[in-house]
Image (cartoon, rainbow, N blue to C red; front, side):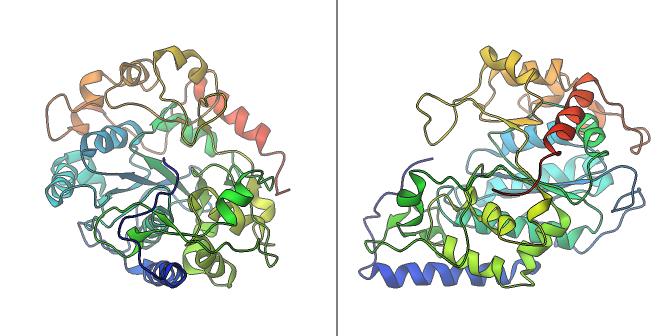
Length: 396
């Protein structure tokens, strides 16, 4: 992640460009219900027990990456795969069209994924800057597509190619089996500190909202006042959202989600504030908020804009953290193999591509009754941790 940098091709009228970026984000979001994937998905139903009254939950994963990260996305998919869940993969405009096509082909070629029909690939690689609002547009697009293709998931989980799970999916689904299905896991605070001036009083324009290629942000010279129509909250960009709240953000049946989209279209690192601000200013959803993202990070001192890259020296702390996911990892880091073999119970051949373009999940994982979960001690630990942090809800 990097601070906003001036583009050499900045338009002469920056205020007009800022307004155009806001309008572009709103127009993009207005069409989210019609997002396309490699398989032109229609709404699907399932014979498995899912939905609000199901004994076991179902998760919807949005997994994103950029150019050169097809193998990382597939490895992450393998690590978090379970037939109960739904998965939507996206490589942004930093990837060549051939790489996106190869990703879709890998999904189609795998017998287990094809049979379960629960993995889709976004066919269009639109531009994304992860320090701007285009990453928020991409995330909302992914949420909208997942809402359209499947009526049977309970929580929306965001992951990037730099993330990796610290528990099996049996552990995670077991832990969430005891969670009320109205709870959202969003790290948040209203203590803005330095961000008040650097993030919210300064306007930026994210050209990736209206350009075909990934583009850096550029600043707008005119500052803006802090809002008084709503209170800003900020926190981690990685969230676990309920289906109801996801629908609220995507469809915007009251004006708050749309109003905040316009505001955060011109805010740097909008993924760190949009969902926090929507939920904490909503009387309907405020008290469904659990202040935690179930992620493991290690920060430098003083902290930078990105957490440190994790390696084997962090393994013990990761295992004992009660987190469900961790970031960030280097590609093919030895610690990933250690997680595969000692936590996820996957062989290294199954977890990585090992030089192949297609991973055969069917030859690595044998699924019995997918409604029967087999949690480990880590699942019990995660369940207790979620129960503990869920005792306190709301925003302050």
